[in-house]
Image 1 (cartoon, rainbow, N blue to C red):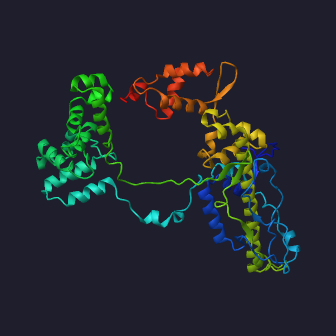
Image 2: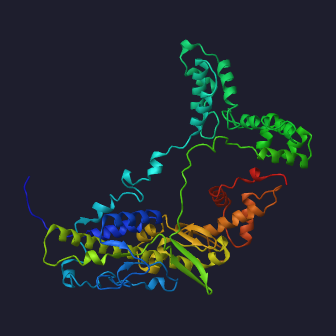
Image 3: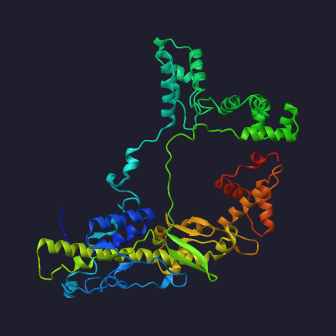
Length: 501
């Protein structure tokens, strides 16, 4: 193969470490941003928390120019945030201004976009040592542990204990038996000569464990177990046992007329029976098990002040940072010692981090401000007034790429008088109206929920009827679209929403 030289013209996007850091900070949530800032404060001695009051001497940085702070801004002023270098103007009696010439504004390009962007770790990932100590070293009691603990308090033969442990292994997180007894029986060693009657007997013992209704073979049996544990003199207990035990299919199909005929109860009496049944737990094991609570911290606050909607960053998640003037003053221009180089390197990293943090805050404010301006009707009147909005609209309004808007709006939350919403909530597709206008799909979902909440429970609205009602409001939506939106909101169909008053 002959070797030759060729000239090739092409374009490629390269990234500086500063740009890589800015992109990474942009996609962090509020909690992750707090952790990131804390890690930087611990690793970089040049950075410190800016106190509300500090000495304004020669070694201190200017309060207005050298800390990353963008905690407040109105919808009118958010787009005019300063974009200059906010950490370049400081005065040091020890170092003077000459040292700034040796510190570049940006690191040299050392990687391409594909090298970094294609291998960025998912937001929120990190080394194992970053996990919370309590989360790593504390174990919550599971449903299986709870049942085995009760089993250890029972006197059983070795064979019965083996059967009980196999049955407990077959219990699903809801507390119901996930396998047929015949399948569990086949899993035992044939030499043990275990019969199905023995498995059933052990199952009945487990069904007396806490919580009530546990280890049932199906929902019907679980409800019966819970009813049997209620006091015998409880009103409507006997009738509820009859409905669950003999007419469970009619109850599941909400055939109230058929239930009245079979049980010889009138509608008022049947309603009392159903109220008692509704107090039972269809998932008796759901209260036990790991409870992974996910906390939501709003990144921005939106409030109305003097008839204007004001956007503010959450100051608790965005602490004020500044460069430590004392350490910065120790830098000597011509000194090439390792200690001096260490200070210079950390000063560079501190400046770049402050710039990236400021850029993140400004971008977040710009995006949220435009969202608030576009969705002002939602803040005034509710979800029914939500307007169609896509990422491209915001990107054009503030002059950024859609991918940047996507990073900003992912796992970022806005606190409004109507609740806390993820920024993604305000983006939705549109549906055309009969008059040529557009309606947000979020507004249509809100209208569907409102109609189902206000419907007659005896005669719930069908998907076709909802489509007709929306059609009268010039919103042309197909019945299948109504069904899709209804299912996305976990609203059951009309036959399952039917109930007695």
